[in-house]
Image (cartoon, rainbow, N blue to C red; front, side):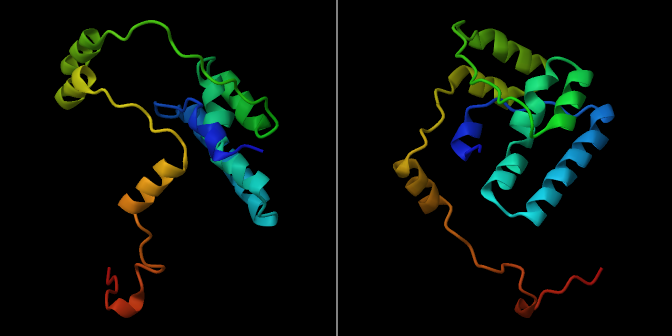
Length: 151
């Protein structure tokens, strides 16, 4: 069973899904949702959560046929390995120039100046996130509050 910490380190998909894969992706998501509705187990939930990073992303660089095959077989696919850190230095200036040419001035500035890293998954990080993002009301769109959509 996949855990959220297993999924964190895996690469995702940064581009739009090709139109030839949309129906298959929707069918796969529907199949996973049906499985979860029939048996609301942690395993079935982990299959839904891993659809992008385990079911789709590993095959995207190998073309549409590979992605279609992997989606059709998901969740009965091999787990992808953790990516190895790239030992090449990042050329921040080259990255920033490309971003400026594409019209992303803010992203270019961040590429040059940002020194942030991904926070470790531990109790301290979770407590900081909970303090910054407290739980809201149970039913934030309660009709008794007086708002009724009259479209």
